[in-house]
Amino acid sequence: MCKLLNMVRRRVDNAIADITLKFTLSALWNLTDESAATCKVFLENSGEDIFLGALKMFRNNSAIETKVLGLLNNIAEVAKLRRNLLTENLMDELFVLLSSENIDVSYFAAGIVANLASEGPHFWTIQNHSREQMLEGLKNSVANWKVPESEMVAYRSFKPFFPLLQTGMDYQVQLWAVWAIHHVCTKNPKRYCHMLLEERGRRILNDLLEYEHTHYEIKNYCCLILQTLPNGV
Image (cartoon, rainbow, N blue to C red; front, side, top):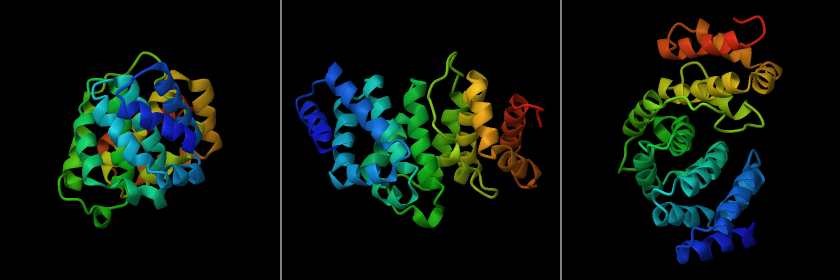
């Protein structure tokens, strides 16, 4: 991990956006996927600062932005590490990247915001961008996405999404999660419909449908997802 981070730091410092940088970012992204321990090591070795530098140095380079945000999204999935990501500098970057024309960039920026916002209003302590402002940006981003023709991202599990789908959660947070689940279930139903059933995701979706205060847009996505599953709703 330290060697990989140092490799990224050297290329960021020298503004080198080469294949080695992209490979290293991909390796770090994979290493932190659903691995809280590796995410913690990443933060302990100043990984967030290095990656924030990469976002600033390689602005509008969507290939690099996607990999950086994908890794930060992995960290945002770990509840006990979220406080490390709630900084003015990172929120400044995310606020802009939510509106990126590249759906991959916008998607992962929205995922980070959704996970951080899921902690509730008491958690949001920064001043530059309010929680409400970031949630509004998240909602607008999802509304503007055009569904890509192919599977945009691969997931090992849906379990990181389930805390975002609690009844009573802000609907903007839920919106990002149901959009993501619907996307992969329609693009690769053989893999993801089985995964969702195996992880008892049907129950979570039905709970949202039955909860009277669930936003209508969330209910609509829940129905669409359930229709992709064997026996539908």
